[in-house]
Image (tube, rainbow, N blue to C red; front, side, top):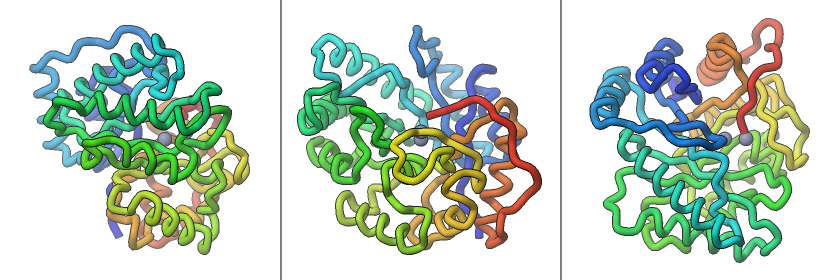
Length: 298
Ligand SMILES: [Zn+2]
Ligand SMILES: [Zn+2]
């Protein structure tokens, strides 16, 4: 069975090189940052560059494109100045994603910083509403679930649903589920029964129709540990068999999968992609030695 799978591609070599790299890895979907995720000024995207990027991506059969928002914003911030800065940056990022022709802007829900979860959630909904306000959205905002560490929001389906429901333009708001975050937050996706329960719970709270993207990551930390540490597919605490069930599940197999597993070079991506493709074909995905420690994405 063929699935739509790709990786998060670095843009250090430029946007066009990112597409070339994704194509070299036989990705049929991809995710990028449009800027450094930890801050600094964003490089300008000329209409000419955006056009070439879009044409090259489409010609390479890569669909959809997801842009992952920067880590430095906190759409749930209780501090007015920080919240306003975050919303301004987020609106800018949304415009960049749209210029790049991205179908999705993956969004971290943020941290409530002691104001309580309900208030934090409504601030996120307000930020998302303002971002979609007055536009004819071509890019959908995807709220990503979290591992539930610290004061971070978005670790339950109910929280994601609460944000989505509070946005007037909610038709343009979907969900991205990260398997490592689900597992760390206590959703038992590593057992056959647990995966079914998790999907049923998601369907009840949010609706499976709103699930648009899956971040496919194994977890370096145990179940329910509330820590976000991605690991190579099949080599972490989730393990190979659960990933086979996920990528072949009748309710999930049409969803695009993006790997955010650690890497220093393309080699690690190549191996993780090969594992996922073997699992999707019904193989056991086993392979040789494990992969070395490498760069980290959350
Ligand atoms: Zn993720
Ligand atoms: Zn993560």
